[in-house]
Length: 99
Image 1 (cartoon, helix red, strand yellow):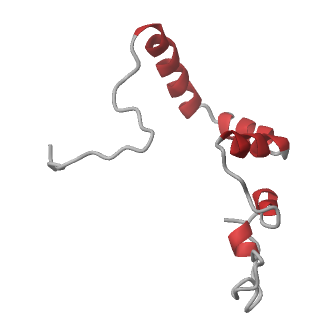
Image 2 (spheres, rainbow, N blue to C red):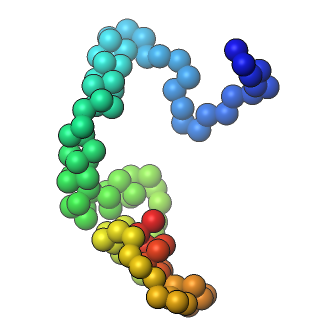
């Protein structure tokens, strides 16, 4: 190889392939989903229901500030006016909400 790393760090990563029937099934399915152009739209459509990301976040054990949780459903990046969302006013500006 071109590099010789001293260590490999993985946060919840799969460094070895799955064995047995799981590997024979999930590996091809993952490759198919990565190559299929409709998959991102399908996931986006599914996540457009507010209960889906709420359940996902709740399933991680996380608790969101209810005043800022609306940023999950922001319509996307929007132009910011000068000074909007830049102070410590407890408000999320559009650039943060759409990120």
